[in-house]
Amino acid sequence: MKAIKKIHKTLLHGAAVAAVAMAPQVLAHEGHSHNDAEARILMLENQLKLLKQELADLKAHSQMHHEKVMELEEWKQQTGGISGAGDSMIFFRGGYARAMTDRGKDVLPDPTGSAAKGQNGFYIGAGFEHTLSRDLFGLTEGTFLEGTDLLGEVMFEYKRFARGHSLLTDNDDGVPVSVLAPNRKAETSTVTQFTLTAAPKIKFMRDSMIRPWIIPVGLGIHVISPPSDGVTVLNPGLMFGAGADVNLWKNVYIGADFRYHVTPGNESDLNGVEDTDTDGLTAGGYVGFSF
Image (cartoon, rainbow, N blue to C red):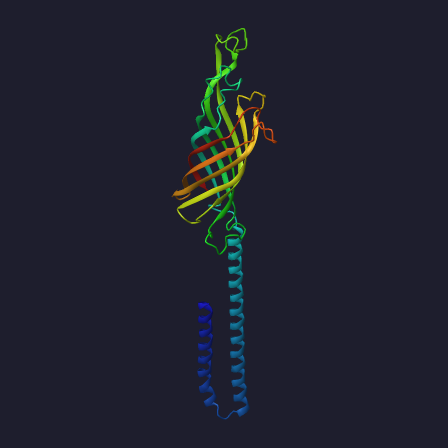
């Protein structure tokens, strides 16, 4: 707008200078007809009108361009914009894991019924998240929750809990170990679990150094090892979580989270892993890199 005003002043100044420059010529040629002078003045007036019309058209075009830019910015804010820096993050996790029920009663992990009773362990894993909406599809616009993002997360983790004894002996005859032959030496087995999850994640306080987040509910798929007594290894369930990101430096983030996994038992209609409860929780930290 400042440029348009400057052009307007320049054109008016030029027209005024031209009019002043032509005035001596008009006075020097007093012998010419009065109609000729009027024609020249009319020509100047027409030129000024054309210049004013061109300036008005230019101003209208500039205003239209400005409105289009504002509309595009508003659309970008509402839809989350085009994917770019900060819209995605890959993170690496680790920390404490606990199984709500030990596997000491399972035959495959531990036929002696004692060594696999450990419920505490550790986990390591990684995940990926991407922004889906910058205002929860318009639900938080103009509210105190403005600056809240909706993301999608996919994550996997490996959990290790305890060590037991397997059913196979390390003797050359390959005779199975059982409670009827407790004197036989058995191979050790590790009670582990692999979990794959997919969930929506809601992050608050956009553009803040610290961003808390929650996972209202997500899907989890758990694979246990050794298999259950029903020789089943796969169990689906639900995941809930909460945590916070801290922008450590540039696109580097650190954070802490807590997640709880609920899975169906054998008594449920979903028919979970036979006689094995895979409920559990994790609590730890992570390092993330946004891009």
